[in-house]
Image (tube, rainbow, N blue to C red; front, side, top):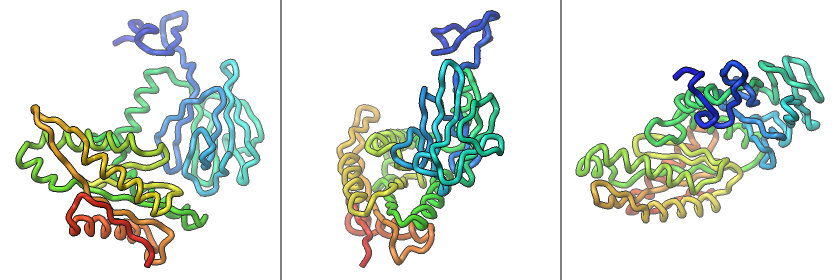
Length: 300
């Protein structure tokens, strides 16, 4: 469809200029380096960036302050302000306290995170989002994929080790999922995976990382959550999934899950592989114990 055919009802918020093209009047940041590469961040009138829960945009970066910098959009002009961060805010390689931004400016915060400031119209926004989602999300369930999960768990593990915080991992898979595929067909199996994923996503916090880890296996990474609270969440997920009304061809497909929980710090866990291994052992203990249950691994 040509741009001349687009109007305000087709593209929400788009502003056609005098010749009928779309004006780039939406301010964005795009993560071009760091752990969340490709993510597109629309700017509000005021947007605080940092690693703390009080930030509007949380980025996973070890040397980023909890409230690192602020972006202010005022009458179409965007300014960036450092908020007294420990390691500074840089625009095009120069440390700044407050500076007006121009389209294409590169902002570095923390050790590895680089953001590109840009103006986009809604078509470019949709294209960027599709590119980001295709790289980081599972095509069927629309949650994060295994590659993204591995990238995040390594970053979170290192952060937890340095700062002495807690991090919990929940692994679960669907009990007897092969039977669903064998008796009802793969379309039914795909429906189960997709609906379960979206249902569980609604039970989680925005800061939790939820990913499809394998065929019918899923992972939830919970920042600053101890094993007791992670076990409560895991039990909530288990009970909710057991009641989930998944219908296919007029019949309900009953499903249950088995769940394993692990937490760091734990003296038995020295690296990411061991962390995943302990959660996986707990998952299989839940299966051996009769399935449709939660097993949490605590320090002896």
